Image 1: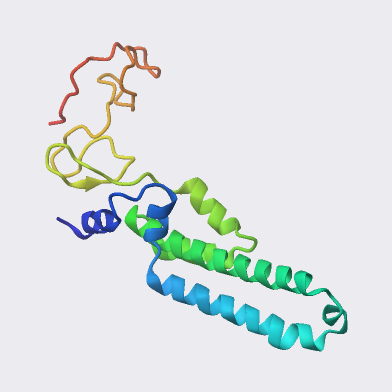
Image 2: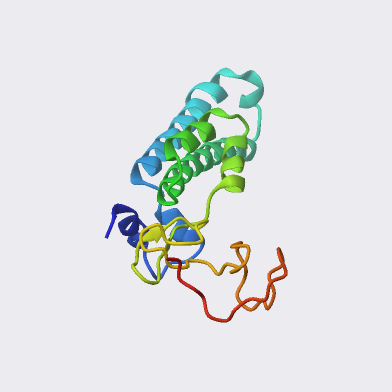
Length: 179
């Protein structure tokens, strides 16, 4: 079992969706995010509000809303950057590059770009168990079909189709294995 397979199986099996995605964020990112949240609260309550004449006249609810809102934005941004790092790594992408893009491209555009351009999760080969990238049609280790492909043009087709939408060739019912 390679390292990528171990990382994919580390997330709890009973958790699905959002909780499973939160589980892949490394503890270091959680610690940094909580420290940043505490730092933001200290800056607002210890430095910002006492030294600003206008802010000291605000009602307490307004100051709480501002401090909580700003803190949650910083917390969410750091956790999203941590998610980009861990998710890109488990997908076999350039995780350092995507993390740097998420950090340095302003207004969360780097994070949005990551979610638009990320590759599918690797899937195990049904024959040899090797974890191949989700975009591969054939296993790089044994050559077995990972996705259904047209026998004429070798493009991806979905199960249940009777004809290839790319070349019009009839789809054979048995998946073939590459030589």
